[in-house]
Image (cartoon, rainbow, N blue to C red; front, side, top):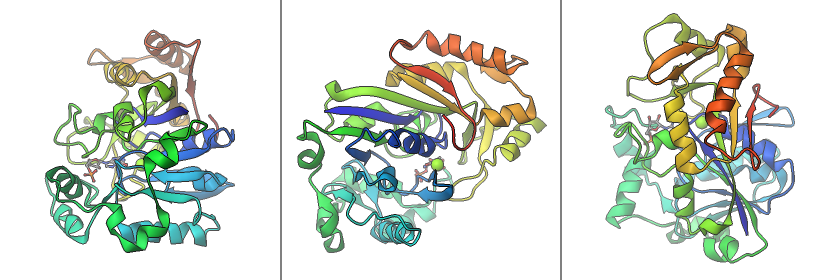
Length: 333
Ligand code: IMP
Ligand code: MG
């Protein structure tokens, strides 16, 4: 069994959906698994020129690949059926491909009501935090208890892990800095967004093949933490990058890439392949800045900017086994 992981290595919204879609074109995978999070995620995918936004349904459905919602995930049943219906109406044949792990947890109306009262963290109000709390208090509801989900249910171990021939792509949600253990607590989500979180589903660590870390050439964050510094450039990045949430439509705060944060995320997750999206935004603004040891540095040209990042991140990775790439929005890698 082999597993390739796709992870956000910032605060989410790095363009993981785009990379998932790109990697699936290679036709190498037997399963695509969503391994954590819930309908708080919004993955934007362009398939045959049409835009789709998925929340819990794994992107394997666009390529006829078995798409499994793993045990660590949480889902609201109505939201799941709505998303499936929407995809079917857009011509995506997902009915037979999507399976839900029997022990994934269910987000109830009560969870959503409780989450909708949040004014502190700036959650997506999808009920994720209250559902996670109930899970760990051991009073939660599991998918196997829901009659309407019966046709979709599988045992994750039987379906995926026991299968020696499985080649799995995991579709991470949110990002390393939104992990519940991350520095920004409490302005984080309630799941584990790195490789460790994916492994919690029962994936053996020896199955790890590639770890794809996805970032943008700048950072963004949605929520109540103060993230964006004062200054015109940050507003320009927000506008040029069309930075508002795929799930809630909220404006994303912006900042420059911080190399310390980047290296930490690469190290923690042992990233083998690193993809920086939205370089076109910096090209358009002719802005080539990042943060190094707490200070903004101006690298002035695209070449210098790339070279700086190749050098910094390349030192942390084994580039004989992986790569560092910069990518335009929305198609190429
Ligand atoms: P929750 O996950 O809805 O509880 O929200 C907690 C924090 O994580 C908030 O700041 C959200 O904006 C952020 N968040 C949750 N999911 C995503 C995502 O998929 N992309 C970006 N931010 C997210
Ligand atoms: Mg998103």
